Figure (cartoon, rainbow, N blue to C red):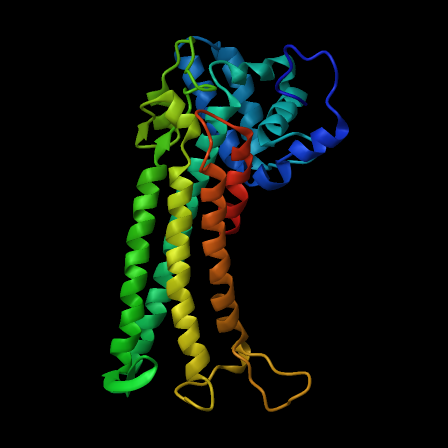
Length: 325
């Protein structure tokens, strides 16, 4: 199902259709897209654009889809799938959800909702690691080890003091993520394709229904802005740097040369040739994958660096690096 047409008399080339599809990636946004549709229908009903009866029909179908979302098929994107599935349930009434709205303001709203949730999940994971560091620090209150500069022995320090150094770098990561949440906490619905809408919509009401603290100030900026995604990747990349440092120390400390720690068998691997080996694969993978976080940040910055206002199809490439991060 295409959500566009107008001047086009001929069909799209199959290669072009396949090249332009993003459903495989942005299907992650399905619950957010459905929530945004529900909020939009509620607002349109409140301002008198959609009747109460039609609203009830649309909401019942959208809520059923939300209970068991199964995006599939050859649809161009998640928005196309939602409307096609809705049309299969309620017929032509499905097109009502497009009143006063564009895919441009919808997709960035979906993306912001996803980012807000992911920030909270990331913060929870940071807290789990901090708790583990605190647990180890409390378990070893009197354990000393060499402190290093230039990777040369320098001064003795408490193991607890060393572990808490990692705790505080993670605390800064948690704070950075909180600032990302605030940046993402702005609803773009109502900005339209780029210039708002002539329908009597209430963007502030849609923002409220979706749990945003505020709505956009400028429609052009609203559909173009991906600062929140860049800032999420920057926070993730810096957190990755901190995790890489911790992982590097685990790799060093578990070598026979250092001998400060021993990995549990459940968190190590062996060698197919050398039976004496006990390899710190999890730490090495953390160290290696942290580099990908830096790459994702650079990828998105490179995508955004020369885009004119407002929406451009290049922005289809904004989500994969953030999703993987």
